[in-house]
Length: 374
Image (cartoon, rainbow, N blue to C red):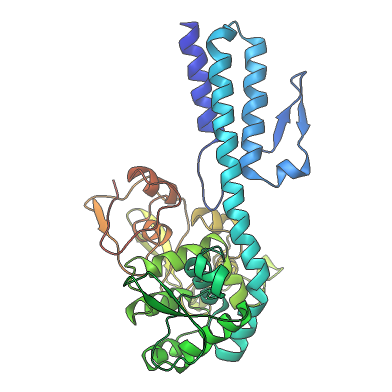
């Protein structure tokens, strides 16, 4: 009985400290010292969600072992093994994330400059660079400074390199420096007749740009658009499309518009109240219009503080449900959809969509995939 209670306690700790949430791990911010009192964690750990979870799990379990009558010979080896596994997993996650963030820090200024010169969203440029070059770690990127996988084509007169892609000996462009690759990518899109339709889109509409790149044949990957969108949303690359500008906030809650002057019509479907975003909307603006706190709307819709709204997006005024209502059992993925956009469509919690389909957070939905909703 005691052993079972010990493992039940450990299971509860895992539910408390290692559950997945959007956009990062949810967490509590206090630790326990040897006397069982709450103490503040070092900033290094506070700023790292995964490491924080490990520390919290460790101190909580050690306190339990001290105070309980469980036998160390049953629990301690199990505890040490689990701690090492999660610690190593956290290190791997940090290293991978750091590679992406370092790439973004290094090349974001170039992407913003290209956006100004060529009217291509900086978020799209960065996401393509991350995806096509593996954050600058691919052989093509390291040896030839080609960060966008652009092939030679007939009009290319510069240096060339050959590598396996669609065929065993495809010709790719080679550059003297990475900046040349970024410039050529911008010119390749702006001068190519097949991509002209993209430049009719809003420069902040990264979702339509991602869908357009896939539909116009930039890549043959059936999940290409969805991968770009995931990079943009996971790493908040959309902030570069606005050069860091945020929507204006009103400091007065007494200036709420009257119901007759509101520009949004609330709807209710599946028992959830929501509005549909229009061009130029923001969570701050909708919150002010209906008397909500912005942070509540962000929480209901499971998005970070600076998440941009696109025309047609659903904004919920209450918590979403654990799963979709009947008769919606499954969803077939379309181009340009993310796990978050699918969860919004059916009013279900984002993380539950992963759980129902037994997918980890790295999963990118591919066109044609069938996902369970219940």
